[in-house]
Image 1 (cartoon, rainbow, N blue to C red):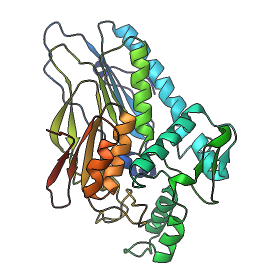
Image 2: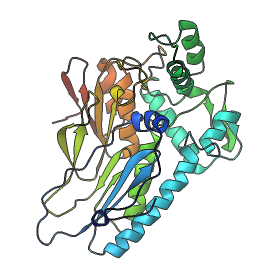
Image 3: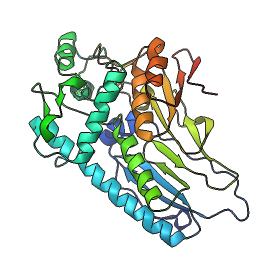
Image 4: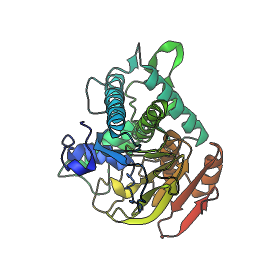
Length: 344
């Protein structure tokens, strides 16, 4: 994860396997940058590109001292790597992997405790639409569709019911400084919130280091300040149908944005079975096509995008209002759009 600048044209992220792409990139949709027109006198923008939790990552620092920007980016990369060792599902030594394997952690890190507490808060706020304990469902569907002889209709009702019985965010015990599952077989995925948390940590670290004009894109996106006094940071919205194109642009100043769409990670060619599970049914959610959320912090935007992609549309506004200043664009299966929270 070596810092590079755009002019160098070199540097490679580690290999991302199909499995990592399905589970990690699929949880959210990265928002590519739209390059604005630079003016003479604008500060130079240092860029780092790499990988974070399996997704493409980018740091942009508008700062006159490129050496200082490079050093700050390197500190962020080290922090990203540290947090990946906490939250990764694919590192068997990560805290999350050990929690899922053993059902408890006697001495968890502050980061894991804080993020699981946040996950429970969003679970309660969304009446369970956001639930980090859906990992047993993911395992069931991934295993089912990996079998060449699989039934295209999905796992059996009995199998889904058994996995669903292990899904309940309230079954995570955070008391007395430890983390434990209240039921054997429970497991957690933080794909719907960890990228937002890591994005916030990187942005906060840069701000603490004196960088007030940055764009952090680590699966989710957070903007601090502006790249130039007369221009906001600008990103694009992904295609809700799952294509590679972009559909619209967003201007960001001191805001975060996250997108969620079932089409980003399909278990089957039709997209009927995908990674966004409805904990109430055990099936993939199908009420909306895609959701984009703008909030003050990426952790909230990430969790809200997941929750609104699962929840019934008639309660989406209530969920959004429970967080504070936030707005959302919801694309329904028929292509129509709902704008929530003063989305323009």
